[in-house]
Length: 106
Image (tube, rainbow, N blue to C red; front, side, top):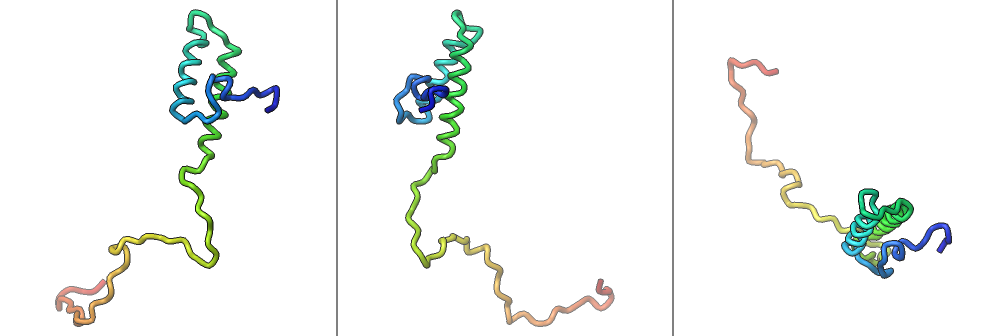
């Protein structure tokens, strides 16, 4: 790790494999402790906590939600289509359209 940028997990007091819920809980706890309205405010630690949370949040956002499946060459991506989305086939039993004799066509 870069010495200028400490480990975000260490700043929040977490293990490196913490879940998103644990990260949020630790962030909120740390902000309450060092907020300027707290009994013993620490602005430098508050800035470090906010920066660490933003880095972890960005890392979690970039992680895929589903495991990556190996691609198989020559196979297309399967797309599910609802049966009602296809247009109906023309009905050959329908005869010609009869128009009203006094009505003009547009």
